[in-house]
Image 1 (cartoon, rainbow, N blue to C red):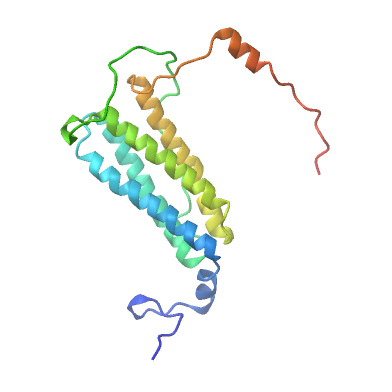
Image 2 (tube, rainbow, N blue to C red; image 1 turned 60 degrees about the horizontal axis):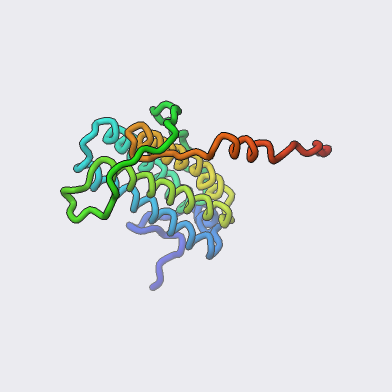
Length: 207
């Protein structure tokens, strides 16, 4: 005998209204949801690997704060994905602890090449991995948010994008402070020329 479609695993009965909400997903949305949830799982699992190798307490603190926040993000996304309703814990706001000071300019260093063993990996490497993964997650969430049909899940995913961007920015600032991520600039005259290349448009009536 086939199980009732409203029956969840373990024999728990799902209320009819919740079952209807949970089915409020399009096919494309379902696939994108699986991709972004898998992306979060990947980031969290990679962070577990990095945690045991990072030496700098500051970077380890960033990793642990981000990991805790991403775990809650994962639970919020899964909650809204499975129920189609407002999650028990709404989307939070990530607050980094880095200052916004940026060092500009380039300094010559040793040419880089791929590390040949895990023992050669440094905090520069791990912070770079973390930056790449948060930026990739931000892109994945942004693309997925534009494809969501369910209004609750759409808002949860969209509201998570600024948090992922903030995490990436925090890691950039950490790398820049330690000289791992250098920021070149254009010549001053070229910058002025580009900055002055635009002017404001007349404001149209807004309704």
